[in-house]
Amino acid sequence: MHDVVVVGGGPAGLSVAIALAQGGVNTALIARRAPYADNRTTALLGGSVGFLEQLDVWPRCRDKAAQLQVMRLVDDTGRLIRAPEIRFSSDEIGLDAFGYNIDNAALMTALEERAAALSNLVRFDDEADTISPGDAGVAIGTVHGKSLSARLVVGADGRQSLCREAASIEVRRRGLNQAAATFNISHSRPHRNISTEFHTSQGPCVFVPLPGGRCSVVWVAAPSEAERLIALTDDELSEAAERQSHSILGRINVEPGRHLFPLAIEHIRQFAKARIALVGEAAHVLPPIGAQGLNMGLRDAADIADIVRDAMLSGLDPGSPQMLKRYDSARRTDIASRTFAIDVANRSLLSDFLPMQTLRAAGLHLIGAIGPLRRIAMREGLAPSWRSTRRVI
Ligand SMILES: Cc1cc2nc3c(=O)[nH]c(=O)nc-3n(C[C@H](O)[C@H](O)[C@H](O)COP(=O)(O)OP(=O)(O)OC[C@H]3O[C@@H](n4cnc5c(N)ncnc54)[C@H](O)[C@@H]3O)c2cc1C
Image 1 (cartoon, protein in one colour):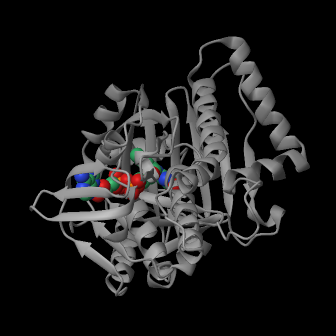
Image 2 (cartoon, rainbow, N blue to C red; image 1 turned 180 degrees about the vertical axis):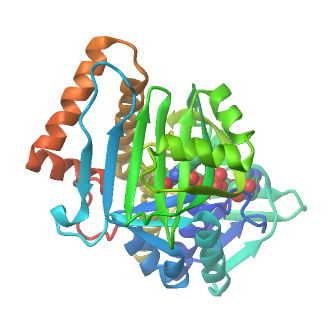
C-alpha cells in the first residue's frame, strides 16, 4: 500500500507529489504524460516562488519567467463614475517583485523534470478509473487495469474531479457569462515589469510581462465578444489589443496560439473526506482576476504535504479523520475569503447599478490614496496574513 496516491498531473498535482516524495513519503502519481495543451501563463505571487524553490523546481525554470514589480489597475469602463488609476509597487512593501509570470508549459516541464528525479515517487502514465474509499485505505483502479491502494488519496484531478465524486463532496458551480481569451504578444515598447489590468464593463483585460519584449494577455469579456476576438486574423487581433491597451506597449504583434476559457466559480464545503483530500481546481475554481487560482493551489499542495509529513513522523495515519480535519481547517479561510473577494470584485465591475459602481470607485479611491490601506491590500493579495510564519508559502 502507498502512503499517498496523487491523482492528476497538472501543476497542483505535480507540486504536491514532489513535496510529498521529497519529504520522504512513499508516493504514487497517476497522471498522463502529455504536452501542456494551452498557452496560459501563471503570475506566481507571494510565497509560490519560495515553495517552488524548496521543491527544486524554480532553478529549472526561473530564466523563463519575468519579474512583476508594479501592478496598474485602470478603470476603462467609460462610465460616469470611474475609479482612479491605482498603482501597486512592490518596493512599497519592501519587495523586489510581487512575483513572476511564467508560461505554464515551461513551469510544467520543470515540474515533470523534478518529479522524474525522485526515486520514491512512482509515476503511472495512466488515469484513475475507479476510486473506492474504505475504512483502512482507498482502492484505486486505473484505465489500463492497474490496482493500487493508499492510506490517503490527494485529488488533483481538476474541475471534473473523480476524487471529489468518490468522496461524495458536493460542488457548487456558477457559470459567469464571461469567457477569457488568452494569447501572447510581442510589442515595440518595453513593459518595464509592469502588469496592467484594464477594467472594462465586461471584465478585465490584463497585459502581464513575459521575458523580453513580450506579454501574455488574458482578455475577459462576454462569451460572444471573447469568441469574436479569438476568431480575428492576427492583424485584426493585434490592432484590437493595441487599442485596448491604449498603445502603452506600442505596436503589438500577436503570437501564434489562442485559447478560450468559459469562466465559472466553483466551491466546495469540505476540502477532505473519506481518506481523500482535494487540491487545486478540484477544490476551487475562480475567474482569472488577481491571479489567485494556482497560487491557492500551491498553498493547498504545501499544506497537505506538511500535514502528511508531520503525521508520518509521529507514526500517525495520514488519511485519518484527524489529519483530514487539519487539512480542511488549514485551507478553509484562505479559499473562502479569496473566492468571496474575487466574486465581489468581478460583480462590482459588471454591475450596472449606480450605487455599486460608486462604492467600487470609492473603495478603489481609498486604496489608491491611503498608503497603509494600499500596503495591506498588496500584502493580502500575495498571501493571507494569518498563515503561519513557519511556512514559506
Ligand atoms: C485564463 C486563465 C488565466 C489564469 N491565470 C492564473 C494566474 O496568473 N495565476 C494563478 O495562480 N492562476 C491562474 N489561473 C488558474 C490556474 O490556471 C489554475 O488554477 C491551474 O491551472 C489549475 O491547476 P490544477 O493542477 O489544479 O488543474 P489542471 O491543470 O486542470 O490539472 C488537472 C489534471 O488532472 C488530470 N485528470 C483529470 N482526471 C483524471 C483522472 N481520473 N486520472 C488522472 N488524471 C486526471 C487532467 O488531465 C489534468 O492534467 C488562470 C486560469 C485561467 C483560466
